[in-house]
Length: 157
Image 1 (cartoon, helix red, strand yellow):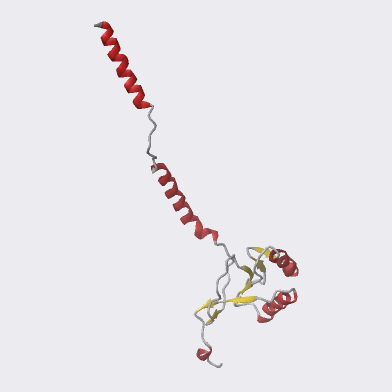
Image 2 (cartoon, rainbow, N blue to C red; image 1 turned 135 degrees about the horizontal axis):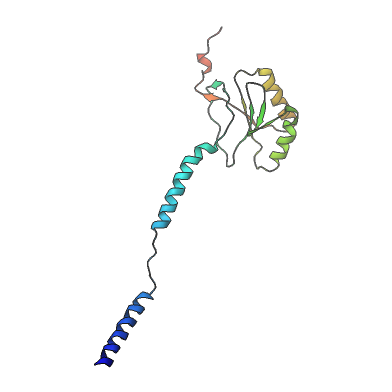
């Protein structure tokens, strides 16, 4: 009887051991989903902060918007104080064309968007546009806010 009892105990321990070594055929996706939801929330919060720009009071116009491009547009901003900002970095106006040529060599599109504060003189904006044109940049778009008066709504002063 002692030998039979020992044999039963050995068989039971083998069965228990063999059950443990069977690979699990299911993947637990709960941690993966948790991580993805956390990343989604982080990106949803961080994305609006990535669009950093220069605060400019653009003139209003009734013109329609230009079609969008595949890459981020090359933007020059003229602030109220007369500073020139290429994308997000302030540069002296003497270096504008040389820096633009360096940036334009790495891009597929030569379109430039010019944003100027409404309080800047027209003469200064035209000087910048003339310098851009003389530097070989001919595709220049002027950026304005929508909702301005149409030509038939402008009153003579």
